[in-house]
Amino acid sequence: MIFAAILAGGIGSRMGGTDTPKQFLDLGDKPVIIHTIEKFVINSKFDKILVLSPKNFINHTNNLINEYFGEDTNIVVLEGGQTRNDTLVNAIDYISENFDIDDDSIIVTHDSVRPFVTHRIIEDNIKAAKEFGACDTVIPATDTIVESVDSKVITNIPIRDNFYQGQTPQSFKINKLSELINSLNERETNILTDACKIFVLKNEDVYLVDGEITNIKITYPYDLKLANTILKESDHD
Amino acid sequence: MINIVYRLKSPKFFEEAIDDIELDGVVVRPTYLSICQADQRYYQGSRPPEILSEKLPMALIHEAVGEVVSDSESVFSPGDNVVMIPNTPFGKDCYRANYSKLSKFRGSGFDGFTSDLVSLNHDRLVKLPDDFNLEVSSFIELISVAYQGIMKFMEFKKASCKVLGVWGDGNLGYITALLLKQICPDCEVAVFGKHLENLNLFSFADNVYMIHNVPKDLKIDHAFECVGSAASQSAIEQIISLINPQGTISLFGVSEYPIPINTRMLLEKGLTIQGNSRSEREDFEGVVNLLDENPQLFSYLSKLITNVCEIKSIDDLKTAFDKEYISNFGKTILKWEI
Image 1 (tube, rainbow over the protein chains, first blue to last red):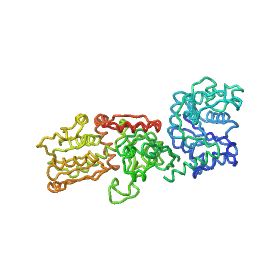
Image 2: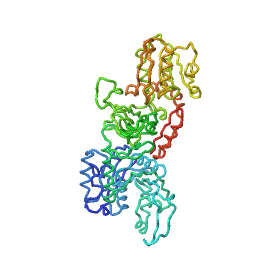
Image 3: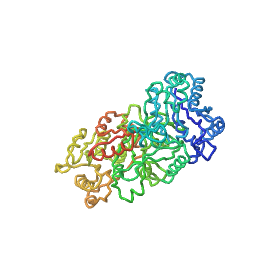
Image 4: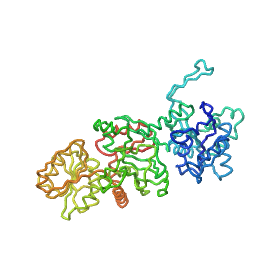
């Protein structure tokens, strides 16, 4: 079986100037999260689309989904967790409790604030997760990466050709992901900022899927302004 | 829904752009596309400057097949292979839709198929049988142009018509000659060209002639001009001199320049000139049926494929256009993986 998990658990602490999480702000004439969900709704390969939302936005998310997709959908809204890892665990728990999955079942996890994800990227994730067990969507790093341990002087400038910027989706075989999460100790859990890192920590291969420079994450007010500008551009053509 | 479109911004310069597409209707993921000379003229900037500034930025490519992603009315199933029809009527009048002013053509009047997804009405798609070669199917649109011209010819073809002449040894000449041989098996198909290496590929034709070395007593009953550009002039001149009285000349070749025609001889022989451009749904259906019933055509048509380019980035798209430009024969196919 194939599942999508749209991770909308964040409360947008970096967005500034608004109390509304960034995924619920409008991009063009629709909330960001609706644009993102549309990319998964049209893909018939998904058995269920899980939307992980902050607790106090669950009703709002349900209302938006009813408004844009109707009541008869394969979308379910669940509560997100405190951290990205907790949110992922909630998604896996829901799947385990409600579906009879096997070792080949996969989950495609995606940031709700990346509405420009393409159909090709999602398809490539499904293929790579099925074949390799885990994959991450990346683009080659264009800026030079500079490392500084004390935030004052450079400690290292790694070779740029070996570096990529991580995007989403990140996709995994569910049973494998669950097994690895359960094997993490407290120290490992605390340093987790990224689901793929669970695999890397446990020496499991994570395959690279080509992302797109357009697959931007709306993190700051500037990003939303930029996203709205490029979307409006299409109306003027 | 948000969609990513890869548009030609100015000659030799593509850009990613964001577009909004409707979820009503059918959403298709392009899989194999094929470059046409019309696309190449935009890419090289050889259209007049005022046309370029009016039409660009625009996604190119009007020859493509794809896979159905979703259909709001469940006429098509996800995963169906379909050929996409670029001519798109925006109203109805008394003319055939491929000649109507109310129609727009993809990659000419609006965005072509170089995008992540394409949203189309149901009648702009024809389902392909599962065993179809998709690389060949990517240029069904081009085949359908030849097909519609031949179908028009069949409406007035006389029983006495024995020899059909095809001028042009490029892609369209090859396809037209091949289809004529299939559709009119009793007629003799003679091909006229100027590249011996191309003409040698027309092994299915009854005769091939170099245009500068045509037997003096040779006569044809009907002609199909697939030359285009300034060279159309000499092709039409030769056709008029070789064609029997009351024959028809079907014109297919596009030219940026006005082409002078020897009207005195045209009148004297009582000839008819028939223009052909683009195609409509029935032509696509006709081609799909013809290929389905005559699968041997695939092997002939696959001889036209000279390049198959995997497109994973805008740079790959540029490289494919550059490669196509230096190929003097054949089709460049884009395996769409961007």
